Amino acid sequence: MGWLPRLPRVPIGQKLRKRVETVTQAAVASNNNQNNGGSTHYVACWSQDNCQVRCWHQHRSVSEAAGCIDVAGGFVKAVTDGRERSLTYDEQENLVRAFLTLYLSEKEVSRKDSKTGALNERAFRQVLDQEIKRSRRHRNPLTIVYLDLDGFKAVNDTLGHRMGDMVLQVTVWSMQSTIREMDIVGRLGGDEFALLLPEASADNARVVFDKVQKAVKEALKAYKWQVTFSAGMVTFKTPPATADYMIDVAERAMYSVKHSGKNRISRLVLD
Image (tube, rainbow, N blue to C red; front, side):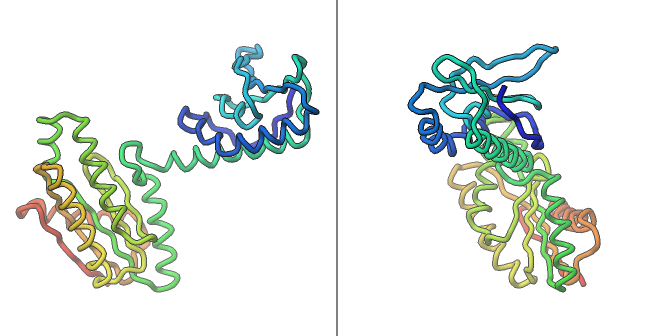
């Protein structure tokens, strides 16, 4: 039985298995050199109902086999010239590296909204909490924008949810292609998004969001969607203690636009 280190484990999704390929080729060359020319493949194994289960694939490397394990407590067996053997030290090292890569990849994926690639609400709030602490410590301003699409429901109702998903994706991609490297886009639910602008004064935030506004409007217009957006931008000279408060203030600013005609931006500066 191959040795499996006690690493944090989470179920590995199908998409993440492809990520293992980034280390597979190097591992294959290394394994072939270590096995004195013998024919070697690797099998993923795990326990289920007190029985040992195999994937029955003949993987080219331990890294590739690791991507086939979907449960905690799995391990990898090596088979050389038809005989099972223990993993070598280098093979064990490759296995550790593969599990760590998969674990970190899964952790990153869990922070993203599956439709758009923006941060999901939970991850956005976590980042906002961190930026609040950093901004308060260094006495930097912090700007948040709460954005809601106008006319999105009509797209879903008339063109279908797949087209609606595309509207969301184009909106996020347009924002991400325009903002600064330090800025963060989050999807808070439905057709509502948040944009976090660290260290941005009111003037700096206006410059950044003017570019975002132009990019999003041009993209939506290019697809001939009858969709605009309303936004509430709030710059805090001294950020409040909680992310919930910042989001709530920006959301109320956005709804003030919604209730007075839509397709506009409300800008506030708070001490």
